[in-house]
Image (cartoon, rainbow, N blue to C red; front, top):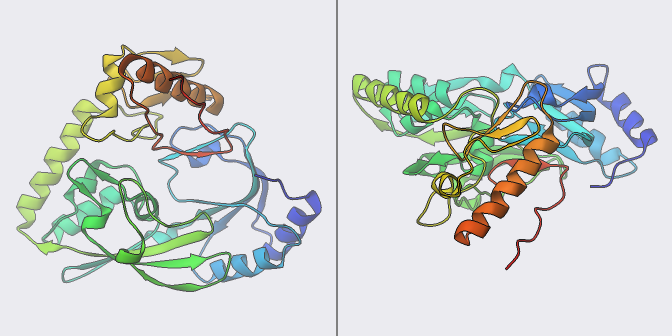
Length: 313
């Protein structure tokens, strides 16, 4: 991505106001705890502020790249940082409202929180999210899920602010082109909130399902500094199985290690380098292709990195 000039960034910072931070670390915004500085970083305190951001971007003399961050649980930013504006959605975007079987959740609402609240309200259909450490907004953008369920199952519509056009409106789920870990949401579009439709259920049954799924994740997946599944599952197989079969559990490059507990997780040391995580992803992908002939594709959202190298035939 092309870096805007210092003059353009300074003019944008002036328009956005005194809460803009310059050269602020992105490491603290991600669960990996790695990544370089953002040229500009702004905590969005309320929804109306997004219109101000859109207007400021439109008035810039050069295009300014934008990165929207919720909980940073599926994100890796290069050590060189991000040359544009990082928008961090604030606590106002974390509200959850339940009206009968309809659930409205802000983009920053944590998936486990929404899962527990809906279960307590006697609703089923979102228990799968109890062990997924992400936000509603990020989950919409990547159609987050587990092997037998995902956001598309319950999503009705989302409110989206387009920072390019300034348009603010509701988008039906059918128009989001939700697929396996994909959607049509672009980098310039901010998911403000989502509406889900769930099914009535016995609260105790829903809570029990959440407890079971949460315990399974604790037993089978690591905690600590990681971003969840690194690679998407190939059709009919699992990335974790392929990586383990290639003998890569515990493989380390610098400050990054393939988890000994689950092969499709990469753990980052405290103060780790994004370059090490990326290099380990590249090496795992290469060795799995060498071992099984399968081309793994990153699930992690990579910002500021070159494309993954071509694999040898």
